[in-house]
Image 1 (tube, rainbow, N blue to C red):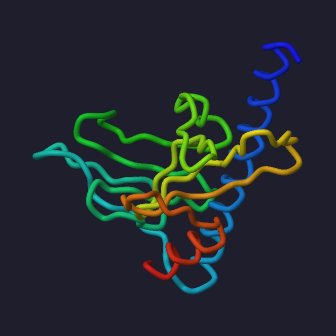
Image 2 (image 1 turned 120 degrees about the horizontal axis):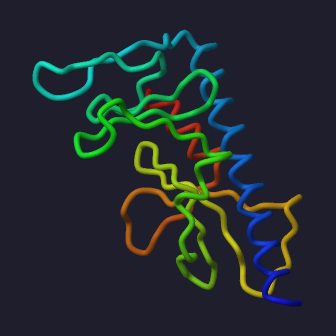
Amino acid sequence: MTDQDVHGRSTALRQAAADELAERLKGLAVRLADTGVRPKRVWFGRGYLKRLSPVGFVLEPLGPQLLLPDGRLWSYHSRGNPRGRFFDPRVDHAACAHGPLSLGGRDFVFLGVVVHGYSFGYLHHDGVDYSPDHVDLCAIAGHSTPPRFARPDDAFADIADKL
């Protein structure tokens, strides 16, 4: 297998994981709406230049971070874009592409999404030939040592319970 084949396979795996993450985020937005949580706008910015965010479910009030009804994330940081940043995992995961983190014989590939202490990515086990049809989406929970992996169902259930 050539380096180009390996790169193509890892790109396909990353895209499949990002697509699954985007679907799960959209599912979380639907779940929140179904349970009566109402999307809203929040004020953000510094000083007298405050602005209103897009309409979304408030994930983090400080910052802030919102889950939009279409499954994208929006966040604001005082040192970032003054209008906030939209993040669509299907597209924007590529901007977060770095080498995998080796954790306990497995490689964790970060997809650029952190919500309520869960860093989302996918696992690549050494010696296992994955196809994009089977991606091991997971999350690293909190800042524990050693890292604790969480299944996506458990992570999203915990996030929904916190809201």
